[in-house]
Length: 107
Image 1 (cartoon, rainbow, N blue to C red):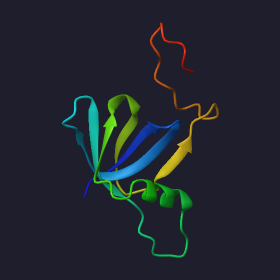
Image 2: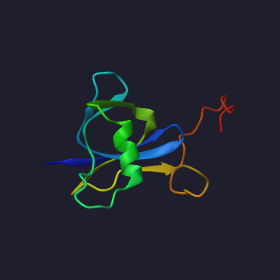
Image 3: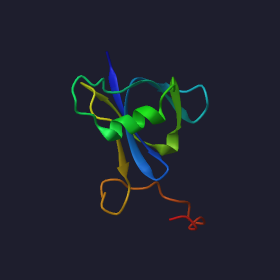
Image 4: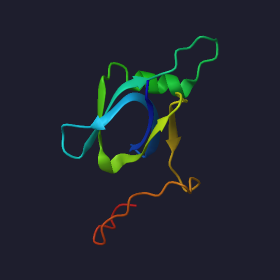
């Protein structure tokens, strides 16, 4: 089974989700992400961030993500933790996509 970690921007945050399917979407300029993987809890320890993502994407069969929001798609050996990361000045390894020269109204 192939597992992909997909990192993308959403509402000022960086989402990292794991999925079994990633493909070019039938909609031009989109990537289709399917069969999202969430941790099945077998112990008493529950990760609140994972539960928040699980609730947010409950009932979602496929995501259609615009290409310009995707940061990275990686094929990984095993499923890791799904995360929502804040994007602020302290995350120096993430650079926002540059704006066109005439459009400086957005930060």
